[in-house]
Length: 104
Image 1 (cartoon, rainbow, N blue to C red):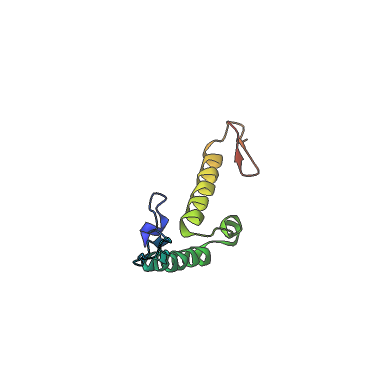
Image 2 (cartoon, rainbow, N blue to C red):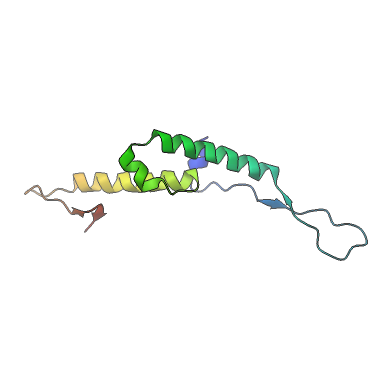
C-alpha cells in the first residue's frame, strides 16, 4: 500500500482506447480502465486509514485531501515546519516561526 503514498507513483490511465468498429468512420469510444478503478478504491482505503489515524489538529490540515498521496505530503510538509520551528530556536528562546510559517 506504500505505493499510494509515493508522489512519483502514477495511477493507471483512466480510460483505454476502445475498439473501432469496421466500416464506421467515427472514433472508438474509450472504455474505463478496470485497473484505474481498482487503484482509486485502494487509494481511498489508504486515505481513509490516514484520516482516521491522525490527531484532530493534523486532521484539520489534511482533511480536504482527495487522494492518499496529497494527504500524506500535506502531513509531511506540516511535520517539517513543526520540526524546523522547534529546532530553529535562538539563544533567547525565540524561534523563527509565526502561525505555522517559517521565516528565514
